[in-house]
Amino acid sequence: MGVAIEVEHLNAWFGSTQALKDISMHIAANHATAIIGPSGCGKSTYVRCLNRMHETVPGARAEGRVRIGDLNIYNGTSATQVRRRVGMVFQKPNPFPTYSIYDNVAAGLKLNGFRDRRRLDEIVERSLRQAALWDEVRDDLRKKSGSSLSGGQQQRLCIARALAVQPQVLLMDEPASALDPISTGKIEELIFQLKENYTIVIVTHNMQQASRVAEFTGFFLLGELIEFDRTEKIFTNPADKRTEDYITGRFG
Amino acid sequence: MANRAWGAPQLSGPELLPHERVSDRAARGQSALLIPEKSSRWADGAFHAAMWACAGAILLVVALIVYELMSNGELAWHAFGWKFFVRRDWDPVNNQFGALPFIYGTIVSSLLALIISVPLAIGVAVFITEMSPIWLRGALAFTTELLAAIPSVIYGLWAIFVLVPLLRQYLEPLMGRYLSWTGLFAGTPYGIGMLAAGVILAIMIIPIISAIAREVMTAVPQQQREGVLALGATRWEMIRMGVLRNARAGIVGGIILGLGRALGETMAVTMVIGNRAEITKSLFAPGYTMASVIANEFSEATGDLYLSSLVEIGLALFLVTIVVNVLAQFLVWTVTRGTPRRTNV
Image 1 (tube, helix red, strand yellow):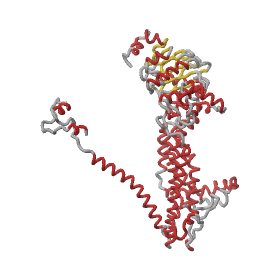
Image 2: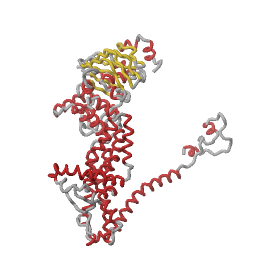
Image 3: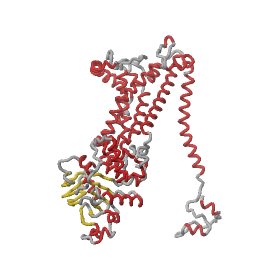
Image 4: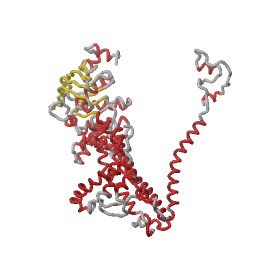
């Protein structure tokens, strides 16, 4: 089951440029939370702080308290441990091209020393079913490489890969922005089903998408969290003028 | 092309007037194209032919080399037949010639060079692309590539004055004490010999292999690294799964180029290998390579058969290079078979 995320006073920098300013936010378990805002507002940086991917960029650092379940991710734990609990799907599908479909999904488990073949088969099948890809690839599991699939299938393969390690949280950084409308619809449908078992944080450029998939929405602007509320509230009756300007298309 | 089909009569008249649109010209029956049509067929054809000539020249040069080697080596071919390549004696006084010691020396010294240089070169490339602080990265890459620009005679001199004494006084006695049971490190430590040739070759091909490995590793998309890291991988696992695996075909290509250089290297090798046409299991013993024997003995080859045999050694070197390259390509093919190289990633 998914767990809640508590973010308190999170600050992040690229070199001397501050990308996130004092973000505090409580993300509900087993719900989808959308992060919206114009380009460069820090929304990607924000989700990348939730699994400590931010610090992999040279010169980047983050400070603050982020609790995911019982784990305080910036204090007393390793980045690898955090990332095993917090899966991530990227903007551009990035399956491993030299691995078969099966090995793509099994990659995370094999990394963590998982060797039981029969359990591995089960988990691969379950993950692909959860990602709504099983029926399309079941006959080519070991024959085809991860990069031989279409863009939308590749993205679902990446979701299956993230799910296979059974994370508690799934971060999605504009998962559908490189996909056509049909594939986008499939990914959104998927997010609906995944909410039962996972806590989802999704960054999106597309406000309709945010209103379709997420119960909560946070609006970021210039590294600050301007407003965070239930999605209907944000889109119908925002409290802040800047939120209203953004969602009505006056800028961004 | 298109406006020719209109069959528009070419009216002489004023050129495009101010504020006149191109379509207005068409309405007056003039060409709709502002830029006058001209045939690009001639230029296209000439370009096509020129490119064919460039590509064809390569094949022609290779064919001519083979022809020259075969026609000048005819005498030796008549005297010894294909057995020339497996005969072990090289006795100019009695006109007995065989290429095997040279083929053996070339292959063994080159393989030795690969065994030493490949891990080092890949290690250098991994450090530069994945771990080095940015301020060190450029300097390190530049220095590695600078090694490739040093003339081989300088490497040879360095080997004679530094490497060989080092091997003779310290390394070879040490290896002899602990590894003589393998038979590869036995006998008198001369310093000069197959091992010295392998080491100097290794140093010479490191920059080639590491430069290419660095290029292909840099070309691996950042998303691949992040994809592995996001699964909870350590840095080494990320390098292994995300970088080395994606770059493997290119890295093998770099190794093949390095091997090609090692097979053909003449000067530095001949200065330290000992130049004795014998096949000995121990790497401490002197040997000889195909390139070295041609360079050393060509000017003093007195008899026609002697000269012809040297040319045929050139042919053997050519064949060995081809066989090794084909084997290496086959190796790449078996490793990457079934998994297409990076497509749309």
